[in-house]
Length: 315
Image: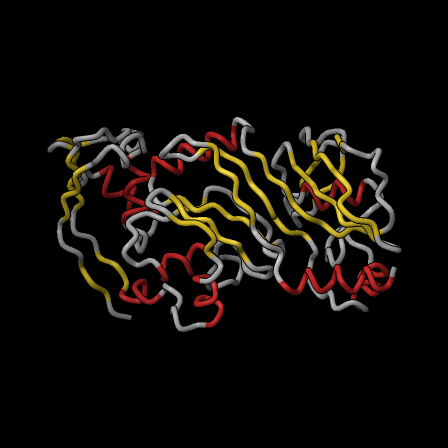
């Protein structure tokens, strides 16, 4: 396996890069080298900021000049980006529903993970980086499950990432999902407030009094013979929150392989459903650049719309 040696680099820190720790900056800037090497070159004083040694926790400031020493990297690291000729990568270009200099918003298809890992060569963020090779910065603002479709925010500037993630932390972002659930959801059931605990071994989430406080608000959109289309708005952002809260209420989501009901899956298969019917349809937040209120809608797509048409006929 061949190796290449990089040349010394000098990076001027602008306001968009400021505020991050030097170790995090280096790990992002030198993606192809092990984390241990980042800390080794910091400890040995090979990284300089304004010609001075710094510790890993040093926070960069606008106007700093960072010297990055030559490092040896494996040449194979340059081949990790997914090819833009792959259908799964190319189709994401058509799924971008909003883009400006601060961010882009993807209507992520079901079955595409937000990032690679756990046996996956790449996810949505790696594919977007391949589609936007000129972008200096592309990072996920939040995550949605692999089998959930819909709105995914990606920051194109570090300042936008900080701004948007702060809104998620402060719970000022409003998110609305469409879900097809089993049986008749009562309009009177408007809130499920049940603590959730995640099993760190298998990632299964259950309602548990020792879990984290979790709240989801619900509204009935359309009733069918043996199913209900609901709108779900998570107030907290726990793993699998909507999926577990609907199951807890006695109305699991169609084609949920962890928390669903196989009888309901068989019923919805009659009208062509073969994927989790959970779609991130609407989001409201403050634009990180203009500070204006934004509202973005993501269409469900033909496959889910046809399922609803089929259910209306069954009714």
